[in-house]
Image 1 (cartoon, helix red, strand yellow):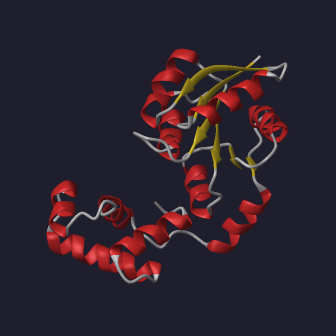
Image 2: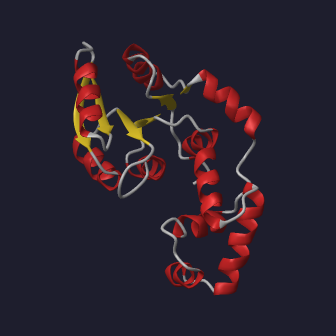
Length: 201
């Protein structure tokens, strides 16, 4: 049996995926979690062969959790599932060691086949998304610009962001200005939205 951990914050979607995968003769869902910061602990207990991770999870993103799983549970293969097929998400998932990347609107048969394929050592990527990622190029944002934009999400002031990230206010202003320029937007909230749409945050 292929042991699967499922991380999805929407209860109905998580339950439906578990039910559908459970109908496969060779797949068993051994753990279900609703938050990203529960993934590694659940994997250490249940020892799944494959972890199916949503990207946008409370506590810790599926992309960050994938990187932790690579280090903490290296035998577990990661497949990222997302509603939003963004090239930046795909690139970050691959950098985090994911073996698969699928959008949620595909058939469950494709998901089951992907689970089997990644266990043989294959990397499985949604074809349309792979093509989009090749044409979009890498994120132009630096790691600190991403940190500053993430800290600006709730309309935080420059002083708030500087305090949270332990940076001088002048550095925060420069990084915000640079990120706004790189995203081709007019203000920090537009920059956050644009970066998220590209999957850079």
